Image (tube, rainbow, N blue to C red; front, top):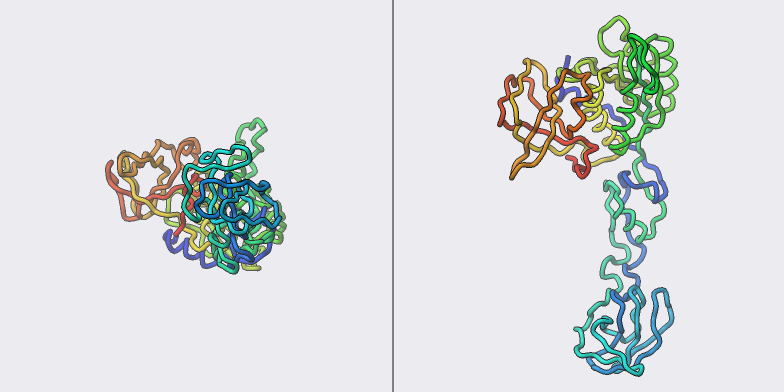
Length: 403
């Protein structure tokens, strides 16, 4: 049994290298940019009106009106003092104009524009290149792409984006006693909660599984599933069958298929019988404990950091906070504990509420939790009001900062 930090280091050291691919801009959100992006034009590409109004030159109060300039109109128009052009937002500012008078500050009588006051020079004009110059760096490699980055990339002339490829993930749940969610379980059977739990947890964190299946607890079925998925995936995640029981065949079957096991037990709770290895091709293989809470914690603490590293993230650990636990917590020595908590703000500090739980199979205790607090292996009794480190689940909205 190895400590958590050593186990996590082994996982990250054997994550595999990110690979670069080019994908269309409409599919690139959530990926990490592999190369810098520079603009191929000035932005704005021309002197552009920021308002609906009138383009004028100088500070005269009376102007004769020319034909209106609309957005997209490329006609060459020129104004001089005493002459004004009606203009729409986004239209090209005519030659000679040095300011835009907004509609609300003007009066028109008999095709003559009258002004009570004149705005300062440059008012309401977006000058060519004032946002971005041609050739300027607009997106730096290593950026995790969001919706605003997509807009910037499009403005810079990019329809195809060079990104780090997200790994192809295969998920296998195991257990002869496991039946689909829509079945009525017979005596001794339970419904498969792990498969939707895993696939949705991955998807909500930006890593949808490519393929998934369920296998009975016998070496032949397990071997067939693992062999198929090892050949078509970059990361294999197996849930169940990794402990030391007589029907826990997963580690031995993986080894028979050329998987090198790096560890089989971690000094943590929940998730002690966590298994991790590398396939013959060097791809990561996880064997997660079968209890749903152990599955959820193992994905959060091991699988997602690996997927972020494999996908080119600059940082792949969730940002750590500190909060006061609201009730006493007792544990046995020797294992690091991940406590599922509801983290909330009260005044200037974080509070951590630990819901009652009957163990690592009690998925109902996680219904409202949004974070995991960490109690070190050498800590025993935690009293209400003491401070613990914690981090939010990766799927928690707005908590996208990594270190």
